[in-house]
Image 1: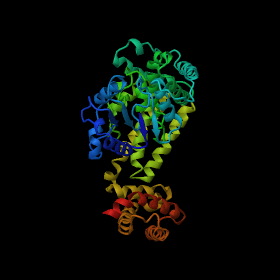
Image 2 (image 1 turned 120 degrees about the vertical axis):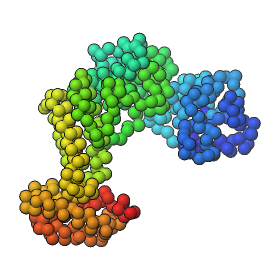
Image 3 (image 1 turned 180 degrees about the vertical axis):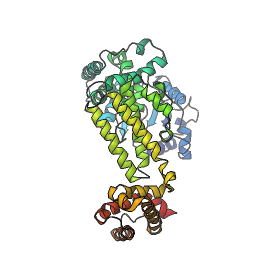
Image 4 (image 1 turned 90 degrees about the vertical axis):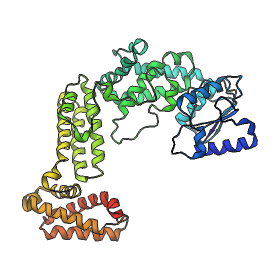
Length: 445
């Protein structure tokens, strides 16, 4: 097995090898001594297309590679088959890319379980002991939760365990934080312990723990996906009873239709309110609201900031147990309705979406609303849109002299209509932030 840095390097190496040994190549998956195994799409280079296979074809190649008598002797990969690949015929692994941490452990596990003859720094018995220790920690977090359906239940019953498992963990103090860390550590140890019998014995439970973790991790505020999340490599290890190539739709598993946040209906919010898994209902609502706020942050600085503060305040009180689950659900439902109502404000005020964004930037100042009134603020908003659109350039936010000129133009408009002097600086800053969101689109128009 040859492990390369990128798919391009893999493709280049394949071409060089078959140039030296043409007899190793065969377009037929059932023939040939050398194969290049990757995933990809129709958008990839033409030269890669013969090597991009679906799951069943990759599995057929894997079975060929496991067969000691098969002429398939050499495989080139980037990250395929690096975990849970029990190929007895694999005696040499050539790694031509820097690897460390979890990725390196996965590769060493594959090499070890495949009977590689080289010396590694990993003592598998210690890995098994570490795995069992982490496994007990995870079991402790699920103490009292029925894991029986993992072995005897139907596929739907196993899937329905995921939202139930989330609810069970979220009901515990710091449950989410503790589970994310515990399952991360279990996954790392499990990758090294395979194919020990102890690892195979607990793989269904590991799959369940990872599936629950993968769903909980979606709610991380910054939206980044940690590298230890249930990924393709781990999915090659664990039982296929729970984990598949498809992402689990937690709404479907909870018996709900996945909504479009922009048109959240009272019916859907009523279903959320009536969910028996109260803590999971909070997570679902928070996930939806975070996604909508992220989308709004590309259109309206003020709305995104305001809704973020309201959401964080409710979630903080909930996490600190200052309010009950039922109360935070009502607060989040009210916030969702406020977002829905905000979508219609522009039409009610007779403003375009861009004009409404600048209007909101001006309206944050209560004294300005009282002094100037709604009609004047709408006039200012329209003039700001016209002025900014006329003077904006793609790189204006990077050039201080252009930013200074834009600041002068904004202040001039605010003074023209009598905007409160003591509030002009803050309003100018907010307007410039809003202008930065639109600048690329407007400059290219």
